Image (cartoon, helix red, strand yellow):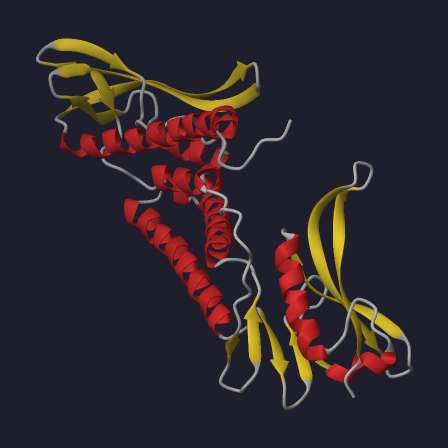
Amino acid sequence: MSVRVGSPLLMIVVVLPVTVLIGGLDFFAISAMVRQAQVASWPSVQGTITRSEVMMVHTSKGSRREVKLAYTYSVDGQPYEGDKHSFNAGSSGIRRYEEERLARYPPGASVPVYYRPGQPSEAVLQAGMDSWGLFTLMGAMPFNLVMFWLWVVVRWTPKEDEPFRLSTFIREDGSECVTLDGPRPAIRVSLALVGSSQACFALGGFMGGFTAPLPVGVGTWGVIIACGVLAGRWARERLKSGHHDVRLHTQARSLSLPPFSERKHRLDVRWRDVRSLRVEPQLHMPKKERVSSYQLTLQLSTADGEARQEAIASFPDQEEADALAHWLRTHLEVGEGAPEELRSA
């Protein structure tokens, strides 16, 4: 059984569970940041650290180190006990942070304790936000982008069965062009966001950015956003400059091919060197003979009289590949296996 893009089954089985899982994690991370920001306006009293140590916590997923804190405080003569440092969930597991926290809160130390107004049993030791929550969202960036693209896919509606029409245009140099589908700017932006966020997340853990003041996290997010913006502009400029164009120069009788697959740079071909042009189905699963794409390929004459293959592009739909093949054959005057005398001089 196959599942169509945009089908209700795809949404129910894949998209909604992923959204609930990732969205739930985002909600808890952001709500913890909001609560931690509210602590700055809470009243405080002096408390006493009664416990400060690192313990091994064993769970079904393994063991991890955690700093265990406990403290006592009084509000309006009523004694209370607390064990939260902040609303940041979890433990870093990084020895450097653990040692810093133990040194800051030794047993017997007198420290300010911030409690919720009207509910003094809920208290923490840290007032206001640091960079922890912002770095946590950096680490979650790949998962959020996966969720975003799943919604893009499921909301995409396949076009009606209309005849495909090739769109050509003339560039300033007089060449007739067709723009092929390259990596879209949104894909480039997503890759830049993932790469920069994960690099900043790793660097923040190494350099101590998780517990740095809030401006450090905000500035790091500024760097990540700037990387995404620059990647989007770069992708759009490449598109405008014709990086993905197939160009036919009628006067020079040459064909210019964009980078594709193992071809890293543009390739200029003389018309008279083109022997044939054909559309080749690419099998995704050879045993089941399932066609996944259609590749447009040129056969060229080399300087020593031999022939070599040069792929132009790959298309998910045969109609698109056939349309571009027809356009090129009309100008180059070749077929799938045209004899030498049928080619243009």
